[in-house]
Length: 384
Image 1 (cartoon, one colour):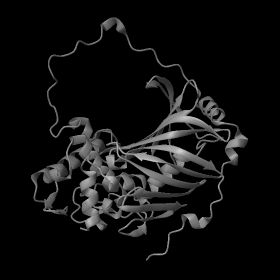
Image 2 (image 1 turned 180 degrees about the vertical axis):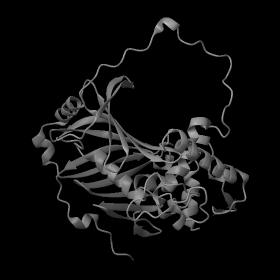
Image 3 (image 1 turned 180 degrees about the horizontal axis):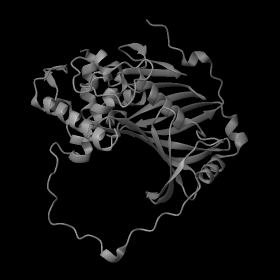
Image 4 (image 1 turned 90 degrees about the vertical axis):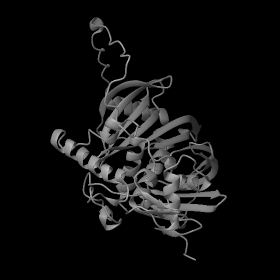
């Protein structure tokens, strides 16, 4: 295992993230993020270029066939569901992780529990991951098998069911959203965006970032940290990452996070003709009443979008990826909308993952639209 692998594993399994983890958060991740431990069986066939986990990692047993890109998300799902860290199952000798070793009983138990979860979903839920590690563990190493006492009183029998939420036409919600963002002409004028701001991790540490976006599918990011400059870029379906240790191509997980960031920075990611969506109810986020719409994405993920009932603006997007042992969520919250060139743009974008090293709040302090950006701005620099 490389030093970058060790460093990434330690950071992913602790809450004390330093500037290095912050940079990886903003720039997706380093090569070391790819070897945390065991894999899983595939929720679907591996994406193009995404190898089965057992072809990339050693000693994959219970979950052969898992797309490599799902390995780290699944490890974080289990860590979050049980409230444990990598050391619970994996072996660490001094400063060296030996992930492929089977020395710990907890690792053997984890394999049995993974197989049990997959079998329950196959037998009872047509293969859908309705049951996950979190279903039973709820953030604890051992599931709670007995209901706590004293028991709370149930609601009165005459209370009756809650009245159903008033139905809403999703197309009306999307039309109101498009109108709230700005005129069609103002939105369509925006072809490129140059952004600067601060990137704040869950522990409060912040770094400065600069992002160039060329819509619809190019992005370049630079962060300067005490450990050096971290940069990355993506154009269409390929990208690269460079830091003080290495320069390499993005993997599938990193490309997915880069696409998600472009989506979040697009002034109007949902345009007419609107995608087919279903009304999913109403709720409150903070003190705001919101309407939920849900849809399936072309890459077989599930998306739920939350729109402010009053302003019509997008407040939140939750994107869910199914795995055999549960759903891996990504949440983006949009706040502090301001008018820039006749278009309302969120200046605070909060991204939440189960892996805290990728969770962050980006606060935009400077924004310029339609700055000339050459294709070379997104090309990988020559290797030294």
